[in-house]
Length: 382
Image (cartoon, rainbow, N blue to C red; front, side, top):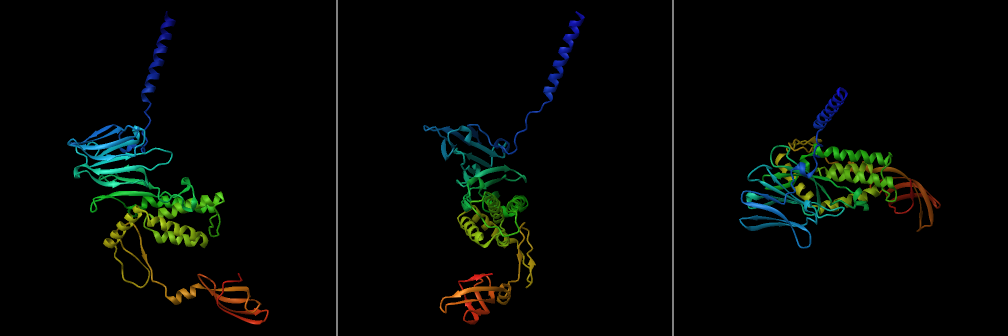
C-alpha cells in the first residue's frame, strides 16, 4: 500500500508540473503586419451612431458591402471576390462611438490582384477621403503620431519596365497622409525620406553587387544576372524619383549606366510617371511645400537651399557655353574612307561631346595630306 501511495503522489506531482508548464506557455503573438493587427475586422456588420455597414453575398456568389443611414443606402462597394473574408472593415478611432473614418478593404481574388481601399468620413456626409482604384496593394496602416492614421501601399504602375516579369518589376512604396488643407489622403513620400531612403539604398547596393563591374552597366535581357541587376536598378530609380529626388536618379543613371541602356530606362520611367496619378499628386504637394518653405540665399556660387521639408535641394551656378565647350572637347584618332575622292584617310583631331562626330583634325590620306572638319558619320573612331 505504501508503495502504491508513493507512486500515486509521484503521478499527481508530475501532472501538476506539466499543468504549470502549460500555463506558462504564451499564445503566439499576432503578426503586426496582419490585417487584424492593423485593426481590420471580418464581422459582417459594423455600426455607427446613425449608420451601419454590412457585407452580403450576391446571387452570383460574390461578396459586396453597403452603407446605410436612416434606412437608406448611401454607398455600395463591390470587387470583393467569392470569399467573405476578402472584404473587411475598420473604424477609426477603433473604440469611438462615432468614428471619424471608415476603412473598407476589398480583394477580388486571384494569384495577383490589387487591393481596393476606400476611406470615408461618416460624420461628413460619408465623404470619400481616399479611393485607391485598381493600381495599389495595401502594405500597412498605422497611427504613428496620434492623429489620423497613415497607411502605405505599393504601386503596380511600374510593372513590366524593360519587359521584366511582375515578380522582378519595380513596386515603389507610397506613404499616404491626411492633408488637412485638401481634406483628403495624399501621397507625401517627400516627407518620409528617412523611412524610404534605406529602401532605395538597399536596391542601389544590390544593383551594384549584381552588376559586379567597374564598367558602365549594359542591360542584356537574355542574361539572368543582368536582369537581376536591372530589377534592383529600376527599384532604386523609381523609389528615388518617388521621394522627389528626380535629379539624383538621373545623375545616377548617367554615372553608372551605359548610354544605350539609359536610352531604354529613362524614357520608360518618364512615360510611366507622366501617367501615374499618385506621382502627379505627390509632385503637386511637393511643389506647394517648396513654395511655402524654401528660402534661397542669393549668391552666384553653389548654395544649399534652406528649408524645413526633408528634401535637400542644391542650387548651382549654370556653366557658360564656353565652359560646356571645353568640357566636351576630346582628342580622337580617326580612320575612314572618303567615297567622293576614293581616299582612305586617318589622323588625329579634336571632337566634341555628345555626338563626338563634330571634328576638326589633320592627317594623311592615300592622296596626300588630309584636313578633316565638319560632321563625319562614317569611319572607325578610337
